[in-house]
Length: 618
Picture: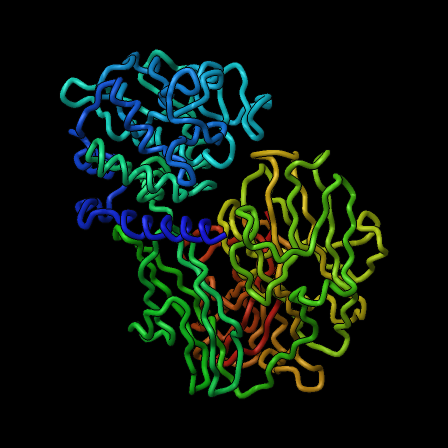
């Protein structure tokens, strides 16, 4: 045991000592994307020290050394640890197949160690010059590896490694100085052209399998000991999205607050839920005055005065890309009554009274606290436990329901709920839908469900995201309201099943005897038709009556999270009592809003007087 601990400690020290990117190595790439970034990276990594094809044997013994046995190497596709003696135990695999450009074993392409890897001799021959893509047939000796007539799919543990080697080759070799111009394409079977595919699959693999410690050590050893250049996509996996992902930086700012309504002094915990690699700075405007209030990732802010507060967050990654999320009138500080918790569940008590109903497949929702497996969440929003569903390896596509116990809403006004969700991997369907019902019979197929349009994390995002506040006002007359999560998949394997996790569900509302009366005046006959409506050119007609002349009248549209999406000043040049306007389902930037519940608010002289719910559908 002591020997094992010493070995692990030495590995950790080695990683700390040699895993740093040289200072200034990527200077000049800040803020670039597309071909500009690709060209800048080429200037950094070209002109490397070239090896002979014989010299590659020694390089691979170093770069692919088994960290637990220095006399062995790790084979790429199988993961086997074998003697480093070389052939006939293993071959020098050209990950960018050498027939794709016909460069053979000649430098620089044919001896570039960044894409040469030790592989089993038989596997090396079977892979041949196949492109990389999702494939159909399981390879008999490698669990998780697939192949067909025109593509090769490596096991999940090295999918990202393969993608980043292909991206390196397409960036290092740009046709300069008599070299080949290698191009990654979204096709297969294009050899002998200097092209390799399939781009869309490789981009997914780069995301789903981030660089491992082994891959980072390999990159460092090639730089330090052999070629003097690095694979930029191991150091910065996000570069692939910047170059080939429509040239757009793949960072998206987002956040949520633990509570959005409260009495002063009102302390609010904000949580950053942004998506992207290597985010290094956060700039918060927490009171809408245009100046920075915090540069912490998850700040706390205390509001001393009543009012509506607009919140903005600007994030920046380590190469200068930025993104901003603004939530208008997101925080409401009021002296009115506050909502109460009606029901909450963080699944710490072994899931009391929740129903798991499996309509298809031999896998189901499960209670889990496994944060060590890479397919499970690495963090948990509340406590240690959460609900988890993953149909990978099942006998048929999934249709599994997770249904809450009965919740009584009869004593509350304006009830709503929110929860945390996490997902990984991809499918042609989202894989999770949220429903509400008041007549659950024990059988989801005979229950009347209402689909809830919640904010869910995007596929492969691998972070927890708050759903936003979801309206339950249509169920205030019911004492047996159920919230359900339906998990589905189109298949049972890679690229047709996702993993989903749910945690920290909270239902809130105002006690009926003291419900907030902000929107209580019934004299304005506010209505809209049609309702629901599709955000098409016809939109919905909003009508209301103004019995008394007023100087300051507006119609405001809010989403269910309380964010203002559009407003319409009302022309009071005439004394007409009946007013009408058309909302076409767009926001202030004339972009279509998402499907969901929206609040139409009539504001007179800066006071909210009447509201009407409407539903936008596609």
